[in-house]
Image (cartoon, rainbow, N blue to C red):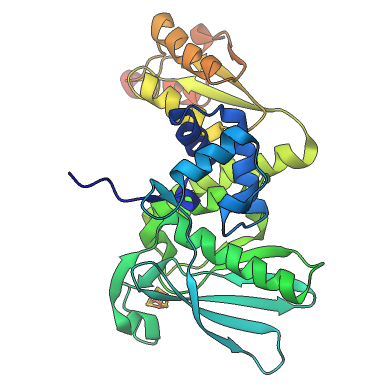
Length: 330
Ligand code: SF4
């Protein structure tokens, strides 16, 4: 039986790295050193790093050719420089031979990387060379992250004291057509323990893939902004989670929430919903199971008492109730 294809460490979020180490019997606190080497230092060869022995042994046993994990290290097949020297465009060859473009731009002392999110593009904008090529495949998160790391490496060579502070997704491909990989990549890129390009410094260009825009707004940028706020201010962030029976109160949802907030100094308040037409608050047994999962994941998590059910004090309840009474009376 053939062994599974190796996975790129650059595809993995912080908690996945912790999990991979734990599976190999290495304690999760070593994840920080590995994350730092990958994303802060941009290491291209982990075997030469001065890790502590348990992590060193794990790297030797697990990372490299014919091993379970590898690194994304696209090969530079061409580089074009603008005449003013401020812009460099790289043609990068991925492990399967696909070639993508990444651009490092410098204006007014600020440096920005423009990354590709797909090989080719399915959107077919008639004016666009990538669109005319057609769609080949989505990029993995690690292939997006590796472009940022490459640009940062080049910037360090030419301006050792400058930081890569801005990211635009305007290269090949429609980012929101590859939303899962893009969101994972942004999570990795914005993590302050590593690359640390904050959400306010990231721009995503789209032809208008509406479900993707909604999802970005709802999940990723909000959470990334919270992370940035927490890291800058050192303050704990309080999240209020309204528990709605059968809608958002399952153990799986609790685990997803824990993963979404992972690494953040967060406190979660659980508030069973004040009943509204068709929806009711979670029963206390399920609520406590939800709380336990979050606590086990390391988050302080408390219940807030429901107040004012009898006076319809929940948001919009009074107006809705008034409206339904008027209809019944009419
Ligand atoms: S979405 Fe962007 S990359 Fe795709 S065809 Fe249109 S302009 Fe080109």
